[in-house]
Length: 212
Image (cartoon, rainbow, N blue to C red):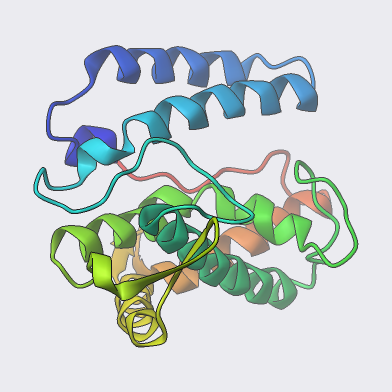
């Protein structure tokens, strides 16, 4: 995302992210891995505003949740919830329990495994849609409402964002493992089924979906 969309190509941050990716391969425990992921996420979101047009009327400096405190965070939270819903569907289709995850802690009502699956798709689906709708003016400042510290999309804007999200989900892309073109929605299902095969012992390791 940063290489393709950032206005000034933050080479220092990209180098640090590459270093963290190499560290993740050598993580000694899940806690160590999550610490690396947290550092990478912070670096990424510190540069997120650089992917938006300079004249965009949005002030974004960091990722905030529960509640999102600005329009960009409100948009990201909405898109992440849509992606999580589709990941729950994909995990169920693979006959896995969406509430028993590997990295997201197990809490009552939290689809931890679906959230694990969503991690590899957040940038290329949700973040991509967010950047597109903000840069094209599909969503503007007046499309958000503030209540105290919280910020949320207005109902009419949610419909436009949902349409953009669905269009992204139906985009065809060549799967690097299987070699044929499928939609992002179908890729979620394929990845969930690959994970199920790992759980059953039919595959030695899980291969995440990545793009060039």
